[in-house]
Image (cartoon, rainbow, N blue to C red):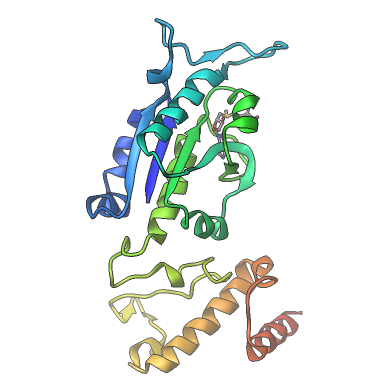
Length: 246
Ligand SMILES: C[S@@+](CC[C@H](N)C(=O)[O-])C[C@H]1O[C@@H](n2cnc3c(N)ncnc32)[C@H](O)[C@@H]1O
C-alpha cells in the first residue's frame, strides 16, 4: 500500500511514523508513506497557501491551486495507479473500523490535510473522492486525523502486526468490542485471572471470550449489537441478560 500525505506541516509526522507498527510496516516494505509539503507547490515568491475568504469573515482559507498541483504531482509520480483521494474534514463521513477495512483494499491513498478555516470548496467538489472526519469535534488541522487514519489502515495490512497477532479479534472488527485481556501474574493484589484462561482448553477459552465480547458490548456499546452477527443462542443470551437487568 502507498499513502501520500499532503500537508502544510510535514514535520508533525516525524515522530508518530518513526515508531511502532507504522515504522515496522514501512521498514518491511509493506507500506510506503510519502509526506509532501503543499507549500512546495506554490508559484509565487512568498509561497502563499491561503487567502481571505470571499464574502468576509474571520480566518484564512487554503487556496485550491497549490493543492491541485500537489495532487497532480503525486499522480505523475505514480503513473498507472488511480489513488483514492481523501480530504480530512470535520464535515466528512465519520471514520470507523468498517470504513478502515474498506479503505485498506485500495493500494494507493492520498490524504489531504486542511488547516486554518479549511480548504476552498472546489477541492472537495472537483479533486477528492471522499471527505472523512475522525469525530464530531474540530481540530486545528488534518494532520492528527491523517495519522489516525494511517495507523488504522496500516494495522490492517497483512503482516503489519507480525505473525503472532491479528487485527481480526480487535474491537469493532466483527461489530463487537474485544473480550477482556489478562497477562501474568495470575493473581495480582488478590485479583485473580478467570480460571478458564489458565485451563489450557482452547475450545472453552474461545467460547468464554466470545461470550465476554458479547456481554461487554451489551454493557458498554449496546448500539453495536444491532448490527452484530449473533447465533440464535447468542441472541438468547443477550435477551436474557437484558431481562435480568430490568
Ligand atoms: C479548524 S479546521 C476547519 C473547520 C471548518 N472551519 C469547519 O467548521 O468545518 C481545519 C482543518 O482541520 C482538519 N480537521 C479538523 N477537525 C477534523 C476532524 N474532526 N476530522 C478530520 N479533519 C479535521 C480539516 O482538514 C480542516 O480543514
